[in-house]
Image 1 (spheres, rainbow, N blue to C red):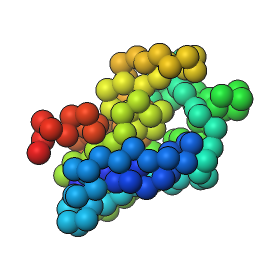
Image 2: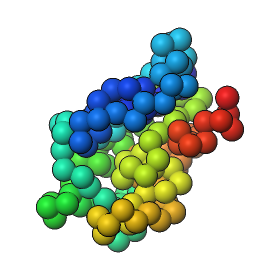
Image 3: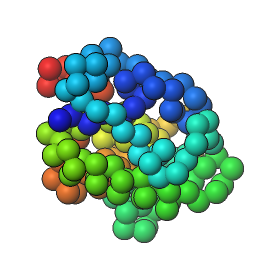
Image 4: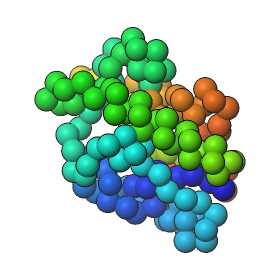
Length: 151
């Protein structure tokens, strides 16, 4: 089973209530080769919600407690991101996920790039919280930008 970010399958669950539809991913879900997850919703967030970025590092640093996920208003929401990551890990183990495709640049799901924590649309290399945890636990995580390398 392949796990995919819900927003990539067309579900309107992003922070601003939109999706990031990728037709290849939507097809995998329709063919029952993939199932959707949204770590942010699993962590207790609603849609829409404030934008958030990792401040002071990457997803690995959030898991270590040396960086935080902060909303635009300044609220620390790290615990909800960590909770969502652990819920996603539980699902990945439960379905024995062979591949996980997550939304690039997200503070949860980024697998190569995330926003740098300044809310100025600047990116840095790094994993989001969920990607970091899943990779640490041995799962193969890619983004929608790498899907052509796999299929």
